Amino acid sequence: MSIALSRPLELPRQQLFWLLHLGGWSAYFALGYLAAIAHDKPPGYWVVPLTAATTGAIATLGLRVLLRLFWHLPPRRLALAMVLPVLATSALMDTTTRAVLVEFCETCKPANRIAFVAYSLGYIYVLLAWVGLYLGIRYYRQLQNETERTLAARSIAHQAQLKMLRYQLNPHFLFNTLNAISTLILDRDNGTANRMVQGLSAFLRHSLDNDPMQRVTLRQELDALTLYLDIEKIRFAERLRVETDIDEDCWRALLPSLLLQPLVENAIKYAVARQVAGGVLRIGAHREGAQLVLRVADDGPGCSSLEGGQVPPGKGVGLRNTRERLSVLYGDAGSFSIRNLDPGIEVTLRLPFETSQTIRD
Image 1: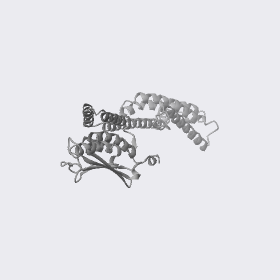
Image 2: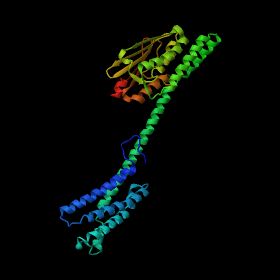
Image 3: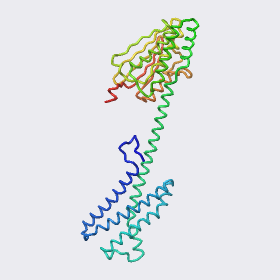
Image 4: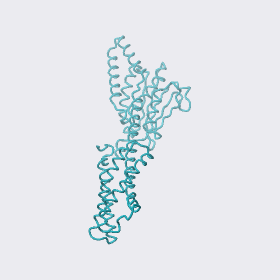
């Protein structure tokens, strides 16, 4: 079995088994040999613990085969199925070891059947320890593998959710842009139509090529937002006015790509497009301690059904997507709030202030 990439320092399963198996029985032999020295056993007595350890090492390989064969059974049935094999293995260890032991101890030979049975049970504690350790490690590895699969499934679902939210471009934007291009072509304003097509192409390429799992700096985010606003400025001309107020320290802050675009699109749709005179779109960013605070505001009519910072059902898909992206990416460390101004609406995003340098550190 190959080493898992997520655990590069972990031994392969087979290598780990042989390391623990041979190491454990070697330690058993060493303890037996030290006990023989401590009890002033005669020279050559080391062959007795060696025989016990060797027999145990070989016999427990058979137990391993049975454990792997019965692994699918419930724990209680597995324990019952292993009773006789453990007793037989204990008797085998005692028989082979006692055949060597009698050379040093004539009285160690079983005098009757009861003594033989008692001697045969002498190695059960060693075998139970071996079986318990084997089962414990195997159950642990199984639990670890299941945990990794669960985490991998959650990660895939997490990425799929982010990509779904990230790629939900408002169809109204595409419809309005294509309709505006069609109108420009009918009016024979081919130059403006060409600029609009190029702008739409550049924006779509950027939105589809960039990985939504990667974060960008605020400067890169506003550069991408400019691609979108350039298209809308062709549609609305002087009716759309954009103001930015970005603290110098915030340009290098990291945030999810195209996080602000749905908010800007929502403001243009409900504030600028619905007013004959158009409107002003304000984009701001500043730092508050360990948080990056982003604001998108307009001077439109506001939303009378806005209650407690919640978007009414059936409206504000872009706002809900932004809220969900923040929740998925940052959990409690990110927040989303919306409130009515006089006039207009302001959306505020709060997320951890991070830069490429802080991530490296």
